[in-house]
Length: 116
Length: 107
Image 1 (cartoon, rainbow over the protein chains, first blue to last red):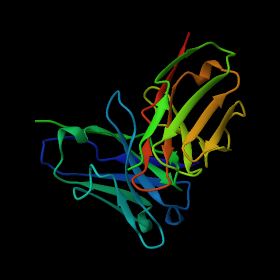
Image 2 (image 1 turned 90 degrees about the horizontal axis):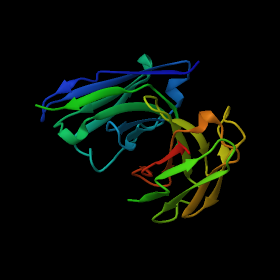
Image 3 (image 1 turned 135 degrees about the horizontal axis):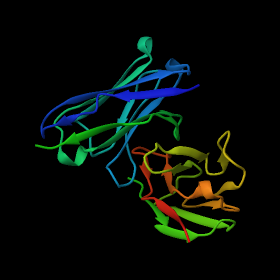
Image 4 (image 1 turned 90 degrees about the vertical axis):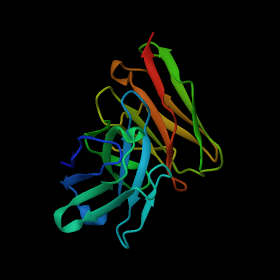
């Protein structure tokens, strides 16, 4: 059974940093591109970032470019999202997903709240 | 960036109805278009990819069509489990973008 489990969500002050993790099981993680997406409570979905497999190429939404960094550790079957210079508008549930282009399998999400 | 616009934003329907949701792209995405279903408090679930390919395990009452800039998701006969919010997403070019969502409500 495919499982993606996000962790690391928390309440953080504006300007602060946070690192999210997504641990995968039941899949051949090292062969799959991965993405992060987010959803502010009660609002729609926003794609955040994607990382490929072969060369680890990364892509970002304009809203997070230069502040967020996606990475992966295939030896630990884990995806990361380092979030710096956090803003109130970054408050959301953050989901990781396997990503062939479409976001195929999703985790349950972790809540990030940016507030003073 | 490619803008995705769904219509309607809210749709009221009854069990057994046939419903269609439309997604329009601000420029061609060829067929790189996915549809998702999301229920309250849950993560989204992939229904259709490449505009018309049904994801494994998704009931056959769901279907997708379209290309370039106009796409539709059709549910042939609504079931109680189908009342949810639906999103389209393009993955033709970065940044990937979602539509704003269509909430399917019970009439």
